[in-house]
Length: 344
Image (cartoon, rainbow, N blue to C red; front, side, top):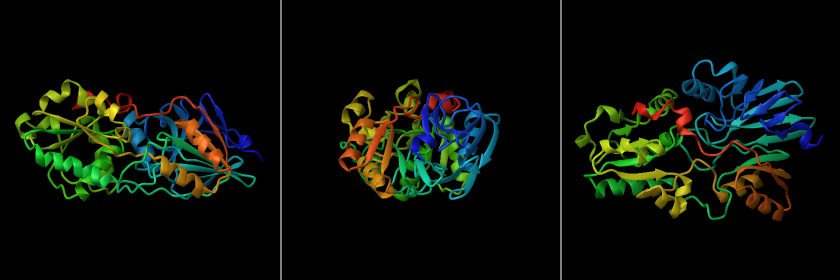
């Protein structure tokens, strides 16, 4: 069996005709397998959605109870038979509930990674290497310039700034699902035990993380706090909120942004970020290349990101590789998935 007999890119997304499903489709389909709950991968309107329980729960929080005609939860490591194809989900280390999807038919195994990282994260299951014949990898940070530092020293930069500027409120831009909760957990691990403040758009997802046993310490909503009382505090907010009128409720706000893109200082300057924090929920160049090697796959398909550079690297390693050029994937769309930012 050829890989293209099992899985092909279509305008709706990756399609497995033998199994009767699409992976992370960008338009409504009859049966969708969803890798994780970020809005560029998890969209409403499908007939049936198969995903981890956490992904289903967070899709329900974001889109409402009727986000799909029918849902089915699958556990990590569990195998289901969908028509002629065996399917299993494995931890991707990206956010809570994120999964790689392995498809096996007639002795051929393809693994679609979705988004993933191989760095430690106390808020989700760690990435699991799944041996396969074909590995479909993201390439968000698929250039050698992107080598992410350890997250702990980046968090120490934030805490050092809070100590240095106790009269200022520190606003940390972070995506509402995954990044915000990871930053909170990292702050707690670093010994910061003061209340952490949240933009209203982060409330429901953060409470859901806590309901799954992830300890985040004392959290408060910004809307309940007087301006003067926010001096010397840390607030997490969607990135778009840190540059609009919402910030006027803070005393002399200092803006930080937690993202792998903060490796590029020009991006930080363009966004008006005073304190760039290189904390990413995607694998960096070394993580991507190490993961590709670890899977043992002889063929690599590269999607959403710096596809050509990673394809070139694969070919220098003697691997067959091609870009998929799928459309509709990229950064999390906060405005479409948080229920609106006026809830702050």
